[in-house]
Length: 305
Image (cartoon, rainbow, N blue to C red):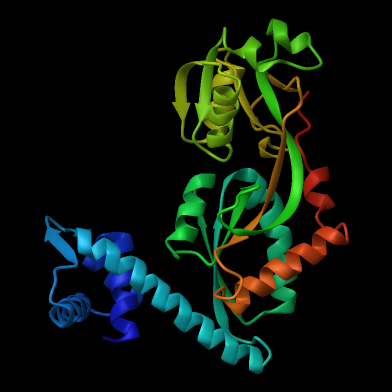
């Protein structure tokens, strides 16, 4: 069993396709197939179920994938420890990010500082909803992830705080209020966004034992805002998720009553097992926060009123 075989296995499992994995790795499809056959022969089990151009994990394959990614993570940590002895000049950092708050406001600032400190580190960013980013972290698909805090499952570093906002059509009667209660939104058609803080919004209603009239589920924030602007629905999103320069006209945002604060930060699985590149990223982010270097992200918050 070699690290190369494990890397190929991990990528085939992620892409669910031998041809796509071969193209990503820059090798032939036969080379990918050979590596997988040899790995399965050595383990004596079928890891992938082939069929109709798609490769799906078997039950034992899913277990093996977790182990493989753990071993690959440890191998990368060893490489980066060696790189640290040379000044952290090389290595890879995989980041899980979500929504406008992390991907558009925080990440560009953090990466700009990180590149200046460690220009030789190659950074890969995967984007998805907040819970998916944390699933990637648990699966060791990423080394570090943005998270809504607190989250006792991980070692975390808080970065920025905002509040949850009711988003309403501009002519809506509730738009005249300075603040809006969650219960008042339950009488309106509700659009639940799958992006960013969608899971948090669902938990807010559940905690108050309220049931919003969910008529729409949107995968993207901008489509949700468009729906609200048309007068079709209301919604709740985090303040820093709203665009600083509205791409959509016709909606307003109002703080919830009582106020609901949201804290966003970084998370790693384990400080000792985390790669040096991930630890350096978290340390840099914590220093920026303490020095006020992340205020630019807060000041760029939505100008929608």
